[in-house]
Image 1 (cartoon, rainbow, N blue to C red):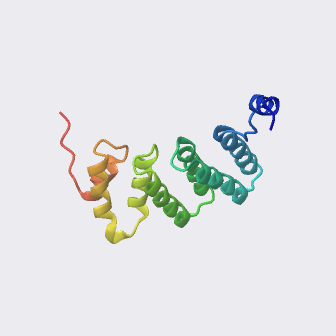
Image 2 (cartoon, rainbow, N blue to C red):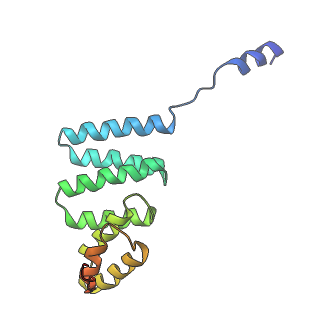
Length: 145
């Protein structure tokens, strides 16, 4: 190539696609539209696409929050339990970890609940569900002064 052609190529803007934030925003818009239209499976697919795209970034963490709500709306307890476990696998200390762990303890196998609640208290000693964990373990609350 001539020097002039090389110079022109260097000045041309790079052909870049949308940023991660833009792709996530487009998928989230699609998910919200589908959800509002009652197309729950399509909305779930869009949220799952966000999770796949974002990996362990904040966008994926937030998409799980929407999936939790959508799954609860569908009243599918088995799917809800599986989703909590999936979330905890990816985000053991994520923004929804406290609630997800408590959900697993409530809905998990009966013979594992005591162990689950004890692990919850070890990991979240001041967690939102501390009182539920203590009740499940038969821990007495100290009397009020």
